[in-house]
Length: 69
Image 1 (cartoon, rainbow, N blue to C red):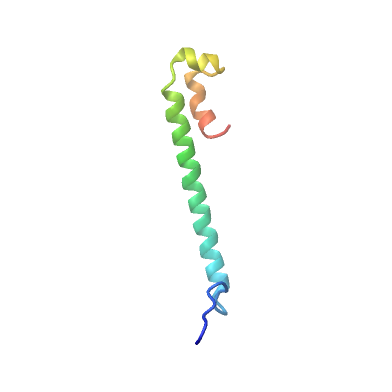
Image 2 (tube, rainbow, N blue to C red):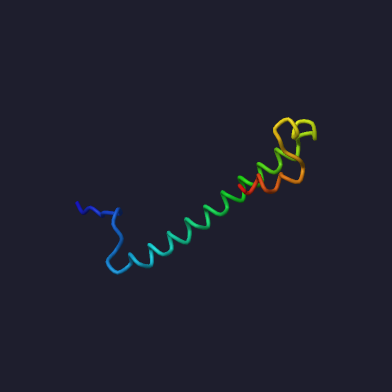
């Protein structure tokens, strides 16, 4: 019976596969960061002005907090 090892890239394909996975992982990271900022922005926007004041924020701070500044 023959065995096929799928844990190693084929010879000569490593640079292309490595580049593709690097670009793909950066794209995924950007989408995750965008979604985290979106969820944070929505959660803070749902708070009242009084609740925002309790945590030391004003409406103008929401975007800065959402993107991590």
